[in-house]
Amino acid sequence: MAVGISSNELYQVQILPHVSRTFALTIPQLPSALRPAVTNAYLLCRIADTIEDEPDVSAAETFLFLERFVAVVAGNESAPALAREVGARLSARTLPAERELVSNMERVVAVTAALGEQSRPIQRCIELMCDGMHRFQRTASRRGLPRSADLDSYCYYVAGVVGEMLTELFCMYSPAIAAQREPLRELAPSFAQGLQMTNILKDLWEDRSRGACWLPQEIFSRHGIDLGALERQRTEAGFHAGLRELVAVAHGHLRNALSYTLLIPPREGGVRRFCLWAIGLAVLTLRRIAACPQFTRGADVKVPHSAVWLTQVSTGLSLRSDRLLKRLMEYAASELPLAAPLGVRRAAVRAAAQAAELYDSKHESGRTAALAALSARRASERA
Image (tube, helix red, strand yellow):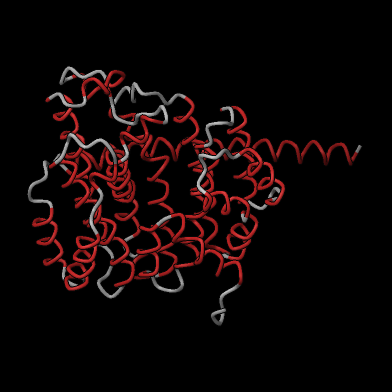
């Protein structure tokens, strides 16, 4: 065991490559002071996803499991008990690595508890994600989402909250990054939405096989496409046109992601590299989707290992130069359609603000109820 690393932290390092090859690649680029917290946050999100995605558990039961998971992360409920109950309900569709992760929930949550102040943004992220993700999953269907604004909100709950959490962790780690806290916070939901939209487009057909579609019908209606009947329309020009519009929006968000990354001081090379590798892989995936709109599975547009290696080398050589990084983005994304980055940023920020307002309102109600209960108990004691 490495000096200074607990057995639970070591478990995190060992399980990560089995549940995410991408994060197993990018997280080690971060400074050592950030790696345990970011790994922990990802694994908690993956446990929440595993609970939410289980098809053999009813929506009502899933909601209760997620509420209890939020309580576990906050230290208010037993992790082993929840892990046993969830584990007993997981079907054969759950990957073995995800099943193992759920069974080791106690070890992951033990790391959360040991993180101190770093646990605060992680707990907020998990609470918002579990609440919002389930509200969307409960009404998911192959008909898609009604409006583009609904896609913005969905992306905020499943990814934007992660961007906000990472921003807070970066600011806690580095005073130089914290000096850019406000512009980073403004761009974080857009950065995350660019990555999430890329995954939504790539995994379109796998999601449909599970009965879900996260594309907005509003966009496809303009091209005469009914998402509910997409299997019959997948080769039509209208579908390809709608897909191209969404590629343009995702590209706009990734332009904002680069702006976010350039706010990170060049001397924080590990944080920059973590962001740049994610952006580079997303841009390359969008290029493959745009070039092959007739793809039928995510594997058809998967970025090859040679392109991953080239992304790592090129971003490494340009790491400290904002000018070179901008030129690299222009070159990599030159053939992609583009929606105005400012517009897509405003949409993501609006969704984030609405969610934050709901979160603050919920917690204020909780505090008011707690104070009322405390006053009533004290009055009873005096009587």
